Length: 301
Ligand SMILES: Nc1ncnc2c1ncn2[C@@H]1O[C@H](COP(=O)(O)OP(=O)(O)OP(=O)(O)O)[C@@H](O)[C@H]1O
Ligand SMILES: [Mg+2]
Image (cartoon, rainbow, N blue to C red):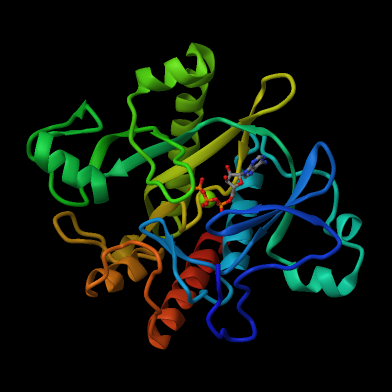
């Protein structure tokens, strides 16, 4: 991964010599701590259509970290999460290294990630809308015949996907296929927990002026095969966030998430394969502001 020249406050890729890097995902850099723990650093990289763009969005990683932390705390009554008791100063005693990742690094329990993405949709948008137009169903779940773009679904639906290998796209699978992969107990628990998390968060966010149209969770299993919420939770990267005040069924909603960048990319003649195009400065700035706005709206009293 190579970085374009970036504003000083943006972090494209972390560099922590005192820890051993395990790998870098599209957005996160993972470092080993010990057998049971790792450090996750959320960079300012933005991936769209599964391609990491050359320009980071300044501050995005900190916003995503703050939003995930917020939800991890708020959803403890539904499921345990991966946040560990160790502090950042304990694992990164060097103040210079620590300052590079402060606010964007979390110490987590290292768990065995389930090989699925637990997707919940409350509104008809994106690939769900395309699927519905073509088949009258979303991922095989039949819906009423008269729904419009961005309509709220009568009930949130669970539409799991496989976790794709690097460079591949996730693929939707049926609930039955998740039973094959995970066994009946874990598959049902993943579905029920994802739906419970979505319902709780969607209601909470709506009171603060944000519609969470859809979202994706990841779960891991601990040594006792107990399920734990991992990765990021209910952020504008893993979800579609819409401002509630301008929402209208039938109209493509504005968003607080990377849809704004996706919409810009759709105006280009780009085939959605790597390398991605560079972003104009105003798109970067606006996107940065949108992420910050999502955080302040959500966490407002
Ligand atoms: N507590 C945890 N234990 C083990 N793995 C974890 C944990 N939390 C997150 N992960 C994994 O760390 C990676 C995070 O990196 P990142 O979000 O950048 O991945 P990605 O390339 O976006 O892939 P994905 O589409 O799966 O999110 C994911 O593969 C996720 O499954
Ligand atoms: Mg991810």
